[in-house]
Length: 258
Image (cartoon, rainbow, N blue to C red):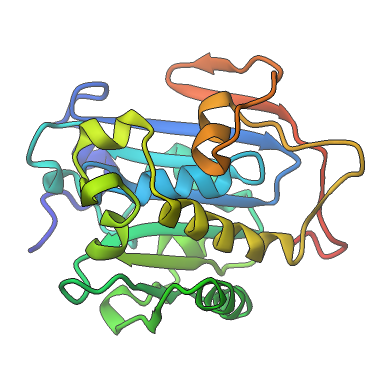
């Protein structure tokens, strides 16, 4: 089905922010990677939750989330047309990007199609996910994420990664396979969710590292979601018009900044 809107500008001229959709951004000081979900909330349920948990404390994060009780598909702006300035600006300032999406996939099969122009990271993510027991398939052309205009490829290196999670894979992240907003907002996640997040974060840790004696700064909700541990006290976060800025993380990128 064709998108109702061909750009963020068209969408914003009709829909009401805070009612139909919201934009969320968390900046991690010194981060060279970003994690995003441009079809979060009820648009492609589970993609935003995955992107948020993967990025927590390691990467700056952006989410465009549908808030409606129904009809969130109308808020879908395809990745090659997605030009919301806050999200696009974050990607353009990052060396690497992980863009999370939801696809129908094969009914009943939990799988991820990994694509994008960052071929090195595609290989690393594929290896990490498969090693953790998560099936990975080659992304078909329509969701391959290889178009230069795709939001994930607007990085400083003109390359990124697009992860398309099947409905069955996303449903496996929540108790009872419940992708409803009530369940997603409850913070309840399955062990499958935590294992998936850990596998993707491991691809970052192949190249990035944390300074001795320091720990990533994450919010309490993000740490509880991504690790299952009770969060330690952290520095306060400042919110401005729906956006949050997080303090220093202690992350030290590798020499090539990736």
